Image (cartoon, rainbow, N blue to C red; front, side):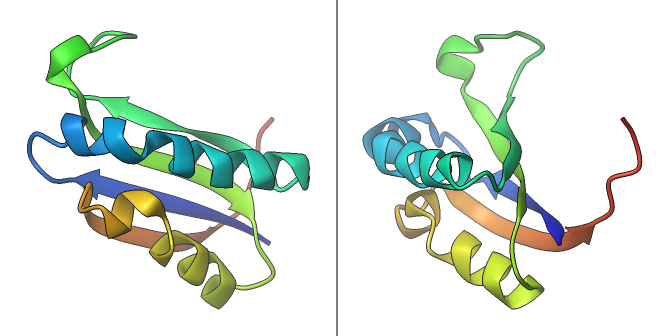
Length: 99
């Protein structure tokens, strides 16, 4: 099944994000290689493709997992979560309708 993972950053998360980004992206790359990643990316803090020093306010990941428990466990093991980048993480089942 497909799950969406919404993550909300702490204030001024950019330095923490930069520090652990390689490990975070490595996990996403593994999902991609397994054919399970649908979309992933950060939410810029300002209306710009590259927010620069404004940084990001959170992230969204949409991927396939065997169960809600598996999706939650994967989200809980994210390096951003461990490093204190994320203030909160919500995992929900997702039903793709379009396209």
